[in-house]
Length: 229
Length: 304
Ligand SMILES: Nc1ncnc2c1ncn2[C@@H]1O[C@H](COP(=O)(O)OP(=O)(O)OP(=O)(O)O)[C@@H](O)[C@H]1O
Ligand SMILES: [Mg+2]
Image (tube, rainbow over all chains, first blue to last red; front, side, top):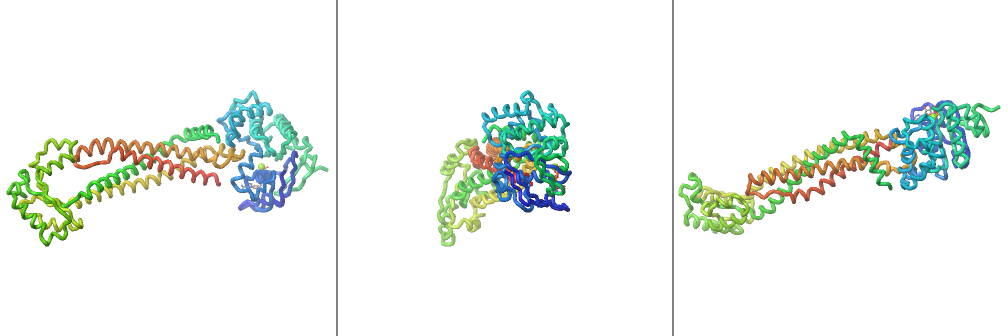
């Protein structure tokens, strides 16, 4: 599903590579926590998977696409099979929750009929049917992240990338988001989630990949945030 | 393709960026008005050329009763004057240069005059006697008109010898300079219009960078992302061209037909028909330039 082979990313002017000979296999249906200190390369790795950036060397295959050789015009189509959420939600402030979700379908050319069905469905799934016509400024952080999640999964992506999705949320709200991610994962979506949240990782007992200075220093199943004894 | 969506997004972009859009419209409007004016001048020149050039001859105007005293002290030219001119035109010195010539008497001159200016107020006040009897000379090579002019200027009974072509060439040269000036100004203005459109579209893209970011994230095609911006540019360009078209029509209607044609009743001027033929070109030019400027600027913005 995601196959990363000897990937190195050297940003111009940086003293050391952001990613250094990283190899990683992620199978369909997995839930992977990506942990590591700030600057260890978690976001960089996610950007490679999303083909927002290309590695300096190495190869990446995602959903059968070779992301090194893929022509630029095929990238948008490739991204439709991926969903993404971020720490800062990235909602459009002048659109309601429902409009934010609908926007992501409109811009990939989905029919009005499809949108009219899919948007309420996904808002119900994330527990926001009552807030469908609220603006982001009228929603709590947790609710905004749910809208962002709804937007990420409304097109039924095979992979969901979550870069510190709970980074701005209190522990209770975070737990709600985690429960939602678990449900999405159980429904068959592969999830890669970068996080600093020790509690969440320890509680999850899932596969944990730890990065340090751009290198993978740990890859354990059923693990916690810290090094297991 | 969801046209509805694209137009809604374009509408939002235009409303947010209204003052810039207005300046784009105005600059396009002014530059295309200059383009249109240059076009009108060229049409004026070519219509005058086709009308006049093959008719242009060297005219030997004979004195009339109403001719000014200092050139025509004897008043109306006599039969002798006509005979002198005829024999000189037929003489061995001049004949080789002349294609053909003919004599036009008062009544013939009056008939032609009335025919050409039948809708004109002056026709009412002219009498045959006021119109010169004229020898019309077609030359084999129109550039040799000075030979005829030299031979007959100052001859008693001749009021004036005139090469119509040289007279026209002066007008054409002036009109050409005016149209060149209009085109140069138009070029500069169009250049600034293109720069302004690029800046406006980039500004519009910066203002909508969140939307663009999300569109790219969820996999909107480049075409879909770019289209609202290109349309934004095209709409501004087309509005500018429409205004320019309106200005050209107003220019023709009120200045050329309403003023010039009244002041200079002997000349044929461009009409609204000519303005119509310019309109598609102006619209096309405005839309194309704006579209291209917007397209290249949004592409460059999205690349980085
Ligand atoms: N576009 C870029 N240009 C240059 N250097 C970059 C760029 N993006 C990231 N870096 C560098 O690459 C390294 C890894 O950054 P990255 O954002 O992947 O870390 P991270 O693990 O996500 O950190 P955090 O936990 O703070 O989000 C850092 O040293 C960062 O400064
Ligand atoms: Mg990061």
